[in-house]
Image (cartoon, rainbow, N blue to C red; front, side, top):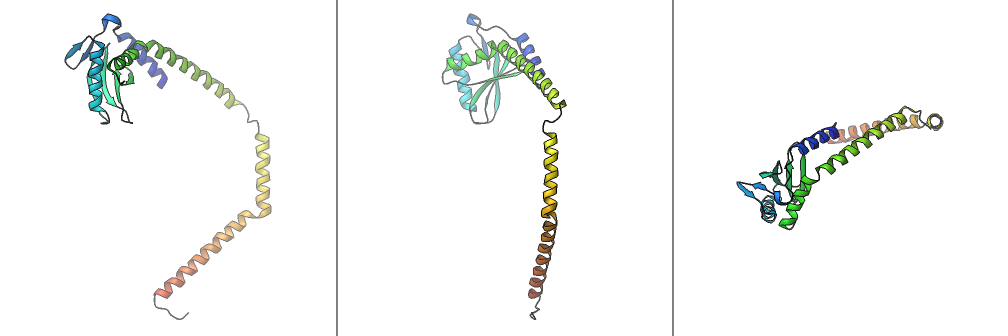
Length: 193
């Protein structure tokens, strides 16, 4: 069910995605509309520096039909998260242009993500069918396992292992209770030993 939900979310994200390639680049950051990739990347990196290692996430704008959030990972790295029906995240890069290229790659590679998820789902279904067939087959070593279990029971009976363990544990309990009662009587002032 999880993969099916991911497929539905990716399809929904593809339907709302706005083309921002080339001269169509535009991102809303805060109250500003930015059309320069370098400036947009620099703003994202600055927000990332402020939020790094805080464990917080903050909405900073919109890009290509997605809400843009900056947050930190559990290892203290800053990341950009695009949210719509699904979540798409990438780490902030050392350069402003690198950060913006990573964000654009998320948006422009949704078809690849969809194809990969469909492929993974198909492989999971095939593997599930194969495993169900194998689960219905008899255990290859069932006879050998039964013979070895019987032999183990014979050895336990021949060596009298269970009887010795039970006797040993009873003797240990008896010794322990005798030691406890002796120690108690010594502390109660009974000096007649």
